[in-house]
Image (tube, each protein chain N blue to C red):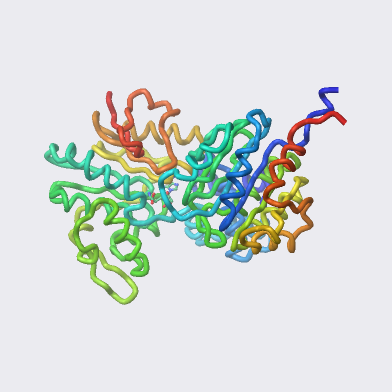
Length: 270
Length: 197
Ligand SMILES: C[S@@+](CC[C@H](N)C(=O)[O-])C[C@H]1O[C@@H](n2cnc3c(N)ncnc32)[C@H](O)[C@@H]1O
């Protein structure tokens, strides 16, 4: 395990030299990420990694990609998507125009899942899905709409559990080992890099997803980011968090009510 | 004197896979309400999102039981469960944290991840217990607990439903004790409850 001082040194360098601020990330997880990096890139010591960071700007993209956790899936937590179908979409349907923000969307599985839900509710034509992440490389994938074919069996099961009634394979074409999702979904997505630590609110939404991103932040940063969401959400809009995340103890808790089904969906009441 | 009677151990972390659930249920049933310790359990399970495991355990114990959510405070006399599909980490002496990074030994939660994290933060006050299972997860973590000054226990492979996991630990590190399932509660009570010598 790398030592606290070494981690501080690295974080300071990333901030001073490249402007990436990881100082308020949860330490236990971040330490494991750095250790993993030492292993996969075959550094024999922390000093060696540190030297590389200082002297090789091209290494930065890879470093940031590996420090963050990008694991995701389509219809992850199917019961949540079912609740969105049943309780959130009917409310969104009353709006002339629907804006949704997926903050920390990784490679986009969550965004395509939502686009499918919107289409099945006949709402996609009047929706825009803003897909943002810190990593430029992961969001490139969203524009391509390509996902590993090997995952489709599980995604199809998730889709059915989420209340999907169609043949899941009707949404994509098979290209070698990839599933290529239809371009009509992508045409409703706006893809951009956005760093939740340092970038500001850029629009007002009716629905914000931020799942499995806050777990990597300490409480102080969680609070700051939740305030950013609060400033980016219409009254009576919805915030969706990851299955083990909560806004109960945050500074914005008083303005929000959790939906009645135990799923991690909150509504802005004032 | 009362001061001298305080035990060095305050954190019990248990890991198990196939064949470990029964052992755990029997154990929690026999633990007293005021144990003066934190119990952390990592069991491999199918990725079922409902909290059957929590209910099963809660029905059998007087201690309070909680499936950990992100940044939950660490409280005594409570049994904490690693949630499905997340690694359970110790953020600092007061808080848990979660992480959905890559599986380790095909497992998330991984026993190694939690054992190593507990060892790093709580060192000498840890008792690590590795139970029945068909997976190599947990052996390296138990060795880490030992190196950090904690007390290590493996379920006796001869009486474990699946011997592989505790046997891996025994091969890798000189554990402090090898225990039959039905003795585990007494062994832990001995270690945890202060007795004047
Ligand atoms: C585990 S993924 C979550 C993906 C998806 N929301 C889900 O739950 O399946 C976490 C994502 O958060 C992104 N992330 C981490 N720090 C961020 C930051 N400061 N700003 C924006 N995104 C960030 C990572 O790049 C990563 O893609």
